[in-house]
Image 1 (cartoon, rainbow, N blue to C red):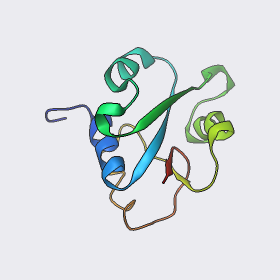
Image 2 (spheres, helix red, strand yellow):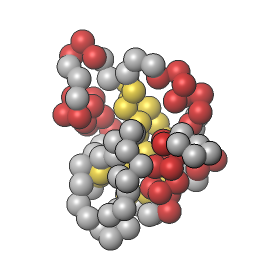
Image 3 (cartoon, rainbow, N blue to C red):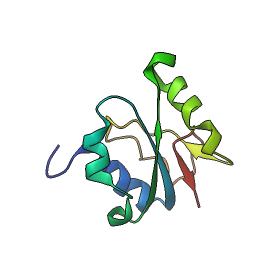
Length: 102
């Protein structure tokens, strides 16, 4: 999409909204994202990865379940394939897991 992958736009929106820590839930095909995002420092973020075992189920609920042990407090869910995901973050709109706020 444009000059960068969708995930880069999402990470930049999250950083601009004041998010500092991001968990990316990955399954099959994870190598490309790991190579591109790395530790997230170049986006101003602390990025950690959670691996979802697709044998235990797919979908958003299962991804959240995989990340749950690392989550506390408020969090939001951002879909990696959607660039429009972050428009309400800075307004304080409540959401579901993925990135924890400062």
